[in-house]
Amino acid sequence: MRQPIQRKSLQDQATEWLREAIVRGDFAPGAVLTELTLTERIGLGRGTVRSALFAMEAQELVTRTPYSSWRVAVLDAQAIWEIYTLRAAFEGLAARILAQRRAALGTDLVEAAFAALPAANDGGTDVRVAADLGFHASFVEQTGHQHLIRRHGLLADKMEWLYRWSEAHWPRRQPLVSDHQRLFDALMRGNPEAAEQAVRDHIAESIELDVAGFYELQGRGATPQQEQA
Image (tube, rainbow, N blue to C red; front, side, top):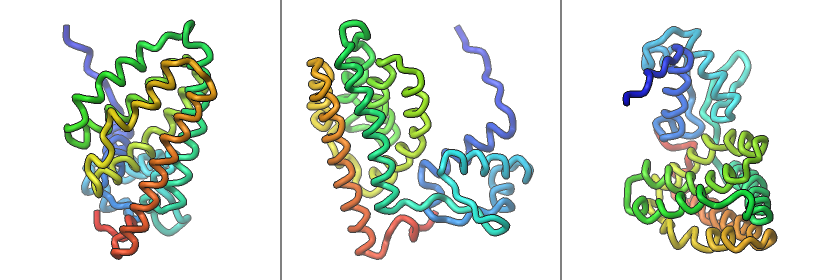
């Protein structure tokens, strides 16, 4: 049966266009965004484009200098560390809750998401991003903790932005299954401390790899904010 057509306002369409352009790297970190240029590229009015820019500012993917300019957020070592450590706090709590209440909450979402990793491993960036972030979202969602789910969801765009940046420079650097095996096993065993620590260890490795990668690019004179959109 066909699904109803989803109606979206022009503002929603402009926001989605701009979000995808930033997250997918069409506009490089630190790139200047002008309302006039975006109006021409998106094909919508300046007021609609400005609303989309404000929406992306709220998601912290865009920064604004009052009476001056809009820019894509800068991606540097500090930003990488901040995104990942906040993610570790949310997902560590989710892992602890799930391990404590596994019998009542179940693990069907987590098991299904983990089972999807092998097929995604050799896929393109879109497939890998969806599978990897989907696995992490699965154990947050499995908790049923609505406040935690919403706050973790607010990080989703920034996590995808960072993931795609990493994949663009080092495609398939981390094998999806082996990279998540220890975390999955810890979630299945039901030990709260071990489950939370597995999340933190997993994310600590990502921090180390991506921060090292940032400095490698910087040493080559190709830090993210210097790249062309």
